[in-house]
Image (cartoon, rainbow, N blue to C red; front, side, top):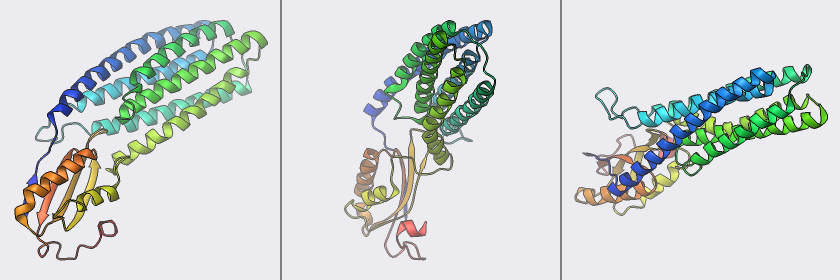
Length: 312
């Protein structure tokens, strides 16, 4: 029985990766800076004009700043080198942060809903014009920040979280602008909470996938976009492979995936060639950390191998 462990990653991939990291880093820093300034301005305006709409929008924006800071922290932690206690470094923290982020969003939604229902029952007069102006600036800031994360959003759950927060916020602010304009022209203060409830529903809808994906990764589930069956087929299709069993796929971070498997081959002299071939194919399928164990057919699983999916 031969054990073999190595992690193949191309150098070109690294250079490209570090360029992405620095552009994402800039996006986080710019987004955090802009949003902190805006939150302060919006809280001030909310108190000054006695607008619950502005105050709850500012509170929501504050939860965004927190989520951006968290996502950036996860990003930095993912680059910490492994230690004797944490052999993968802190990569898994990216998964915990994306889960935490989804939870923060849902808590923010709960607060908005509660406030909106309260205001719906007891409408209060608010200053329409001022609200529309302040929220209008919010649309620009949130829209711009969402745009910063747009191109990387499908590559990493945390970037997707930041993007969703910002896009949801741009929507929130558009809602507040519309309510401000309607209030100026009609004096219907009730529109403020109605828009608030609508916004909350939009946020729940957009956060659901983030919550689902990050929960799956927290439980070491197979990352979205990777199929166990397909991976098994890729490995079986390599010439010289008789059987693959004890196949496990799990996330190391929100962007990196690991795999371990037992590979049954009739001829151990072919081991190196088969191993290279499997790793090449799996790297193309987006799996970076691969550990394979090779076995002879007669030595393999005394308890009978059987198909993987029914056994493991």
